[in-house]
Image 1 (cartoon, rainbow, N blue to C red):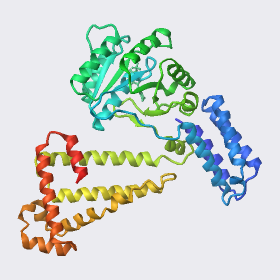
Image 2: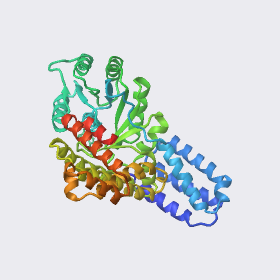
Image 3: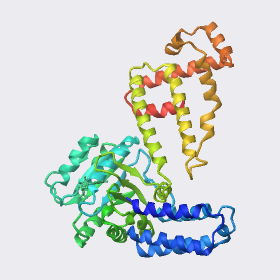
Image 4: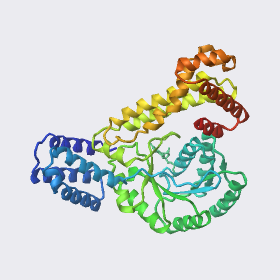
Length: 441
Ligand code: GDP
């Protein structure tokens, strides 16, 4: 995706970036090349025109022509316009709180990747701590219900289906009461598609929409279909109303025009992109990072994030085991600090990437309390860290002086840790509560 476009952008921007002065002619030439590249990438003609006009207008202003580094100013303008084209802000799902059911309606043509994406999103939301229910309301494609059930098994997300039912609305109605009764807080409804847009399909989705009253109406559009994806999104938005688009098959070798035109044409954001057939291959869509990627600035942030996520998952699992067997010690507690610091250094890596400056929460990393607790634990022997109960009064005094704190501070930490362990033991079955607890301490 975007290979050719990226190459052109990189070339054009490289040519411009080294210049100590830029003339109107330079701008015209650069923009002309960008225009051709966008059209070749199958971007909607109107969108290209608007992009080009805005860029020229801004670049002509004094900002570029008179600035110290005109090349970089120009790149910034192109980058900002590109971000704007892709949607400006990263837009997540607008779900209700954990105690209220948030229904999500999926729609799209047959083969767009709807069923797969429902399961991908369910898995993602489950990992984020929600309790999702998948609802099989695609009753047109023969294998759709079975497919969703299989995906449900893979992801560990329950699937609601009604054997023999022909009317999707009825399935949805029953699913709503089932979800409420069983305290699911998210309901993801897979609906049927058709080969092409037709009235039957629209009526069916409209009917489901009015019964379900979803908080999110997501259209799954196949990136491989290019401009057609944009037309489909427009149609669904006008006839049913959508809150966002998930662009599937983003991993495919397409020219990427759909991604670049969707927001401008439909005014609805791309929220996620499907990047493979596997169940965890769904990524949040970040307009700024995508713009950098297209302009050839590299998508380092996504890579860093991915690595970070894997590390965190592995460590969280390990921690979970310890909590359940109540072998969680002060040493583990200390390692939590180190982990946060490690993330801190990851953050500084992130900061080096263009556009990411200023996203660092210094307070969280330098919290005085955390430093104090760390110093106290570091002044203990390993044996004490593994079993804090053996720390008597004289050792407490020594630890306090060794860590530059007071006995009061040491006692407070030990008391707090005891309380924390006790509460954790009580809730060993409730992972989410544990996570909340841990973050409070
Ligand atoms: P539906 O008819 O809209 O429910 O489509 P399906 O969910 O059955 O998907 C159609 C095909 O697209 C399947 O072979 C999926 O594995 C594939 N697919 C879905 N999403 C992606 C994606 O993000 N990348 C790739 N490469 N394939 C995908």
